Image (tube, rainbow, N blue to C red; front, side):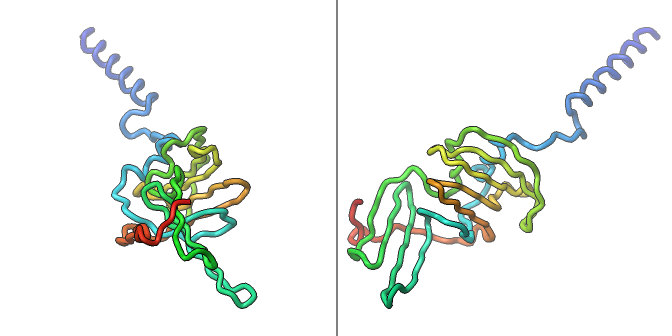
Length: 187
């Protein structure tokens, strides 16, 4: 009988210890900010579409307008660590520069000073909000959807310019290629 009471006491203590340590069935809480911002690396995300808003000194986009009756255009494509920029009026060639920035699945790699901000309900679903500094020291905020680890929103400030990306499409098969080598000069 004493052995049975000892077993019951040990089992009860083990259950209490498991419960206090977040054992099975206990809420685990949110992952760390570093884990949240690395989620896109661990998904089957191949491409994403986003809407750009704010002021951006640089980015992957195309902008066209007319100034004093003349067409003005700026295009930037970032592929495999190289930024290709095309400007009209200009020399009619893409200018290539090696870059350590650019957006992709590993955009948060090399970040530091991680902080978990909270959980938010966004139109695209429930998301974790975390902030950090990118590898170049620029502050950014990232919202990663809880259900699949995909980025939902990304805000960064570079050289005083704020850029907001709102992601709305994923894995559409979008293909981004560098301009033909014959149309590129080193910048």
